[in-house]
Image (cartoon, helix red, strand yellow):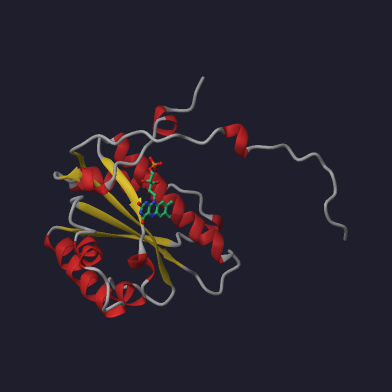
Length: 194
Ligand SMILES: Cc1cc2nc3c(=O)[nH]c(=O)nc-3n(C[C@H](O)[C@H](O)[C@H](O)COP(=O)(O)O)c2cc1C
């Protein structure tokens, strides 16, 4: 028996190959219900999901283009245009935000990992419902002004922009890792002494 095709055949569809329609509100609710079942140490729900859709995707693109020029006034026009169109393709972009509880007995990395699981689960849920999706970050995910523009608080981090939409052009498969190259069994040999 092999893992479910959702895992064994999962693949991203580049955002440029996505278009309308977006999932309905009902479909999105079901996607979120599934995706928020992630492992969550301490049950602290250290995440939230912020949708970017409609005209505001283009407005955000304009903001990114202006910010990119502010950061680098010599930036080539092609790079600025790319930023302007970052959110223009998929009709729905789900921003997965890690809401870090600080201080907490749950290490920060575990809170971010749980938010990362939300991203992956959203990809799977989108694929299960017949949509395409891609997890993107780029500089915008880490820029303080972009984060403030999206209303993030000081304890919040963008873990991913999950672009979701209808597949206009199917994704090409890429070579996948050989499990044997990424697996070993600990021999018990000591490498450090205490
Ligand atoms: C945290 C994270 C951030 C990513 N950001 C980008 C990105 O900004 N640009 C990009 O081209 N791919 C990015 N990717 C990779 C894509 O999500 C995707 O994995 C890639 O298109 C390959 O497709 P696959 O998921 O079918 O292997 C990112 C992946 C992760 C996990």
